[in-house]
Amino acid sequence: MPERRSHDYARSGVTSLFAAFNIADGTVISELHRRHRAVEFKKFLTAIDKAVPDELDVHLVCDNLATHKTPAVGDWLAKHPRFHVHFTPTGSSCINQVERWFAFLTDQLLRRGVHKSVAALEKNVRNWIKTWNDDPKPFVWHKTAEEILDSLAKYISRISDAGH
Image 1 (tube, helix red, strand yellow):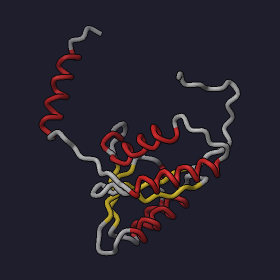
Image 2 (cartoon, one colour):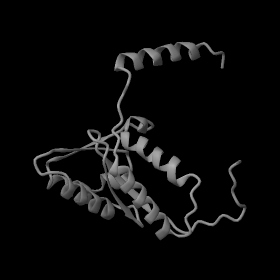
Image 3 (cartoon, one colour):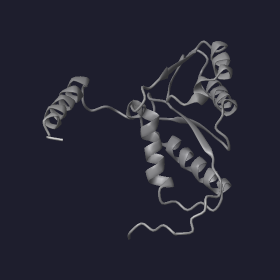
């Protein structure tokens, strides 16, 4: 069946999903907020702080969104030294495993989903995440760094003389 889109599509509102992907076991800590500001991000950091055992350090890999770099977030992080924030270089979100998880969410729930309201969307997302966490799957690299770099080098050599 071809994908259908109506000409009169209307957005009913938005929600922001904050998600932390545990690379060791594949579980996800998440929160939905109607806004995406430093205030909401700090609430999410607090949720992570409560969910992760105190004896563990927390390494966050974040994109370069300004929300993650505000003074308020910096102050919160200064008071929570077990949190270590790492930022992905621009354009390299593919190395951030939570981005792969977001792709699963998009493919399996959002892309062709029908959500009559923001509340319905949020309920569906929460249910999908609960189902994911009931049987979490960590992502495993099957190639070594050398194999990946060799493949990239072959590709670059093929396209460098492409004539365009």
